[in-house]
Length: 229
Image (cartoon, rainbow, N blue to C red):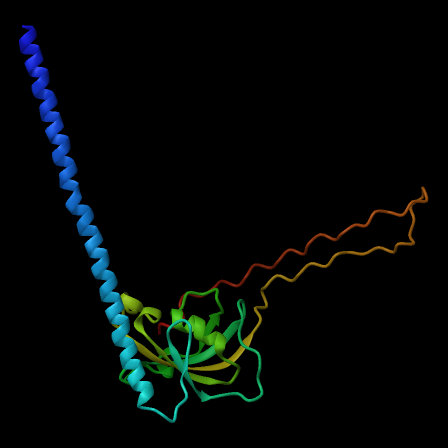
């Protein structure tokens, strides 16, 4: 009887050990597959960026009379109209008013200025195309700039779910008509002052008091991406 119990326990232990070992071995290919997928994805992205930059550089080379400027974000721009008098550029919180035209990398119009209409953008506080978000901050009032955006800082792998397809490099021409501070921004409260010569009935100078901060008015609701028509 004892021998039978020992045999049964031994069998169960063996089955359990084999099961655990098979489970561990079954998981290993998944880890390797995941790492392989990530590597292939990274390689595809590098190849895509390299191909798009090659096309953009050919465009720049084919227009030797046009001065293009490279940026740290990985896009290029040139001036169609450059201001010789303005010095200020939009900063975070400003409201920028501009016109926009979007072309594919071959120069075919995707969205004209008339299609998109006048654009309003709360600088660095609104979700718009990454390239425009950065590029507008280089511009001065009344300037017109043409940007060459690789797809990863345009609409990326998903496009705009309309006329712009996945992984599409773009040519964007922007005219910055004006930009102003956000009037709804809270004003800095001032600290109240008191005449140091004023005394309390006990003859001691009163303690300085400060005024309560002025409550900020509610900010105007921020619009969604105004780039899409």
